[in-house]
Length: 384
Image (cartoon, rainbow, N blue to C red; front, side, top):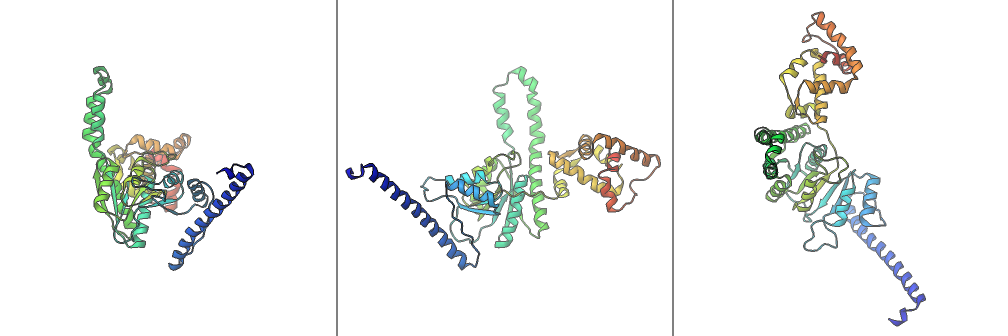
């Protein structure tokens, strides 16, 4: 209108607008917190109120990172959601930036009645961290927990089919195409099933250590697709997944499977930023195999130190992603424990025991001595 064309009047209106907006937003924020305050008081739960200023996602991510909350709860969709909305922009942006808090994303607003907790495990520390969270929530809410794992035995068929269409005869010989395809069919397919079943076996042992019995289910196919199908069928209360998977780099914001499940899963989703490493011997029992040569080499170690030695080698193999322990893996593991100079020096004691005809299967020692061997004579005994 004409009366607002005056510069002074425009400035005055801007100041009034800014004041009203600032005050109004604060009132709205306080009203949200008043509602939460009332609910917490009814449930006798302490509440610390905190009003943040700035871009929603940025202020939230900074506050969560600064304070290191164990759990952050956000709605999957905000007030701006429309019919075709899948995940709110603020929620997604916060998830991508937070590294120190589990993110519980609410999709189901009905009262928490029935429904189990499903946790997807792929062998990563984040997925096992999610398992620990699932067990804690299951105990707290008296809900059954189920661990699921999905492997894709069909990918290499599509990959080889695609490659076969572009390789000429000479390139196929260099690549040894037919041999590679047969190797995948005979070894990798069955090996994948064994590896992912081992993750479920480890999960069952971890649960039993906490006095819980869990169901385990192995799925075959594209991971996120099979998990979504399973969730739609089973209708759990909560699906827990690691933020990143076993094949991701630590600086990845979110893994592809976690992202797809966050968007498409029809139930509440918890993105786990918690890490847990199952006991080395538990993992090794299900995931690692020893060659005959490696086992014979272990017999050179005194019986009282073999358990310590095996644990050290298992730890190295798991860290490096080995599933078969051979002589070369033992060499690398021992080299990781001691530098070469110390290893050479320790060979002397192993030779002395050999020359003296000492039976290493009957040698005895206290626990402190066995542990000391990890940094000294053990390496010499294992070197040859």
